[in-house]
Length: 83
Image (tube, rainbow, N blue to C red; front, side):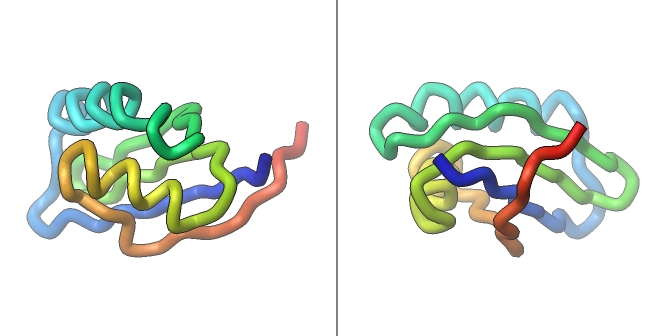
């Protein structure tokens, strides 16, 4: 399945704890969309969140966010993993 990196920009910053809770909600919702959220990274001060997701397409990845908490990605990029 393809990999995607989605990017969220939250004005005013974001807390790591809030992102952790949103990620937990994603994990609960992902099975309904044939999606697997793998990892996430947070820049609290900049309000930027990066999510690595295994999904059939970008819309399926965003559908999980929409269902779980409503915070859809501002950008979604197809990526390839390297070592």
